[in-house]
Image (cartoon, rainbow, N blue to C red; front, side, top):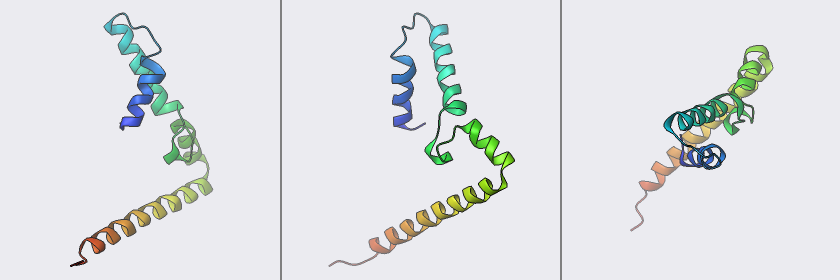
Length: 94
């Protein structure tokens, strides 16, 4: 979980509730993780919730092809940036 996601769970679930005991806190946190892992849209899933994404993935072959191409482009971009970073770091600027 990233720092931004952690703050969202705090602000969206924990800080807005009065938690009186461990069990109440545990239930709130479990609900937060359920929402995050099933209900909330994710940018890396083309702004679908995980459940929506899984349904589209399982039932729409054109969606799978489009998403696979998206992932390939993403990986290629990471590789290019990594290669360029190492190439720049090897340049002697003296």
